[in-house]
Image (cartoon, rainbow, N blue to C red; front, side, top):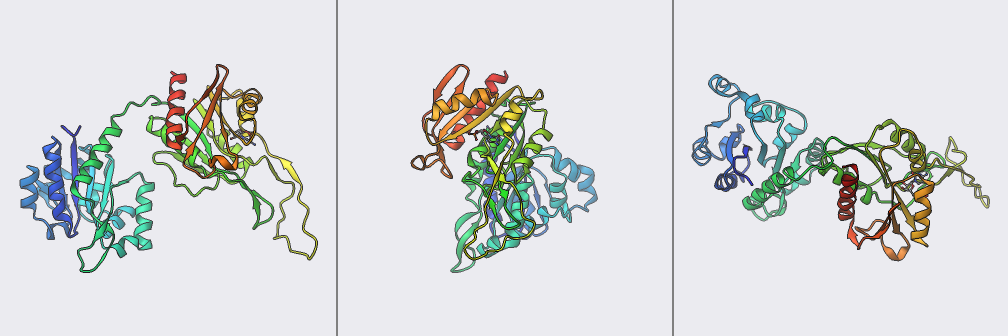
Length: 401
Ligand code: C5P
């Protein structure tokens, strides 16, 4: 799996730097070509001599060394590689990466990188837990950087323990192997654009109150992630949810059904659309400009207007994607209600699930669905929402050819 893979390792200045020597050995054993850049402070923890002996390559460190820049240069160093591994990634190095600071060869190379980056954090648990570090790590994740660790355990400092340790060398090697395994998976949706809606919508009553529903967004987000893994360009249009944005997906955040409708049509053309959002069927007829005051004994009346049906609008539009998939959350007569929706909404598939309280679907991690199409009904076993997503994406890939 790693044979011939070119891996650039950036070693930061942390006490765990010595463990990365083991990572270099194990990657080399598996046939990878390893080159190393030491940060300035990395050199305080491991010597270029040791690293060079293990990697069998010249070790780079100084941005302003004219021979090094002529030799290869930071642009080439970061381009001519299949993966960049940053280990140990100190709080300081993570902060510089998150802010695009290129103040030495290591950070300049990371900023110039075209290859995917995996960061292995290593620092005192308090530094890892600090909001500044968490913010920087979240920024890197949003930029598409992956993480291995940090692990939990004892710190270099006496009597200190927590989350912040560098992952064990073999866990880092396993993470690198998993990365390449995923990268070589078939991409049946390459070149396709898939649109996914997810989460609830919220409909304001006044500036502080709204009505909504119990959708967590887990299923829709899992579908977007699965489509991205299958190689599609994915636009995910999401109502307010607490699940994180999936990796490699363009996310458009909306609140109301009408905003979601606009975002869906703005994202066209698409090859397939999966409408997994739980769109509010109604919205308050009037939205008060100011907070509605509580008056004793006189709760305000609420009247509602119907929201646009996004799925039905798209299903019957002439810009309709080739494949349109809807969901049907039912608490009774799941199959027959879903069959009716297949026709009324102009969908190619309806994925019907039972969301009665006993099913535990809302907010839960698994789902039992029926898949309805003009060809009939198929009942899938109870599966993790990720597996439902993978199966559905498989179905879509097959139908799109
Ligand atoms: O009619 P019902 O709400 O059961 O239909 C569910 C399907 O229709 C889901 O795919 C949902 O995303 C979609 N829907 C929609 N716009 C609405 C209501 C539902 O797109 N206003």
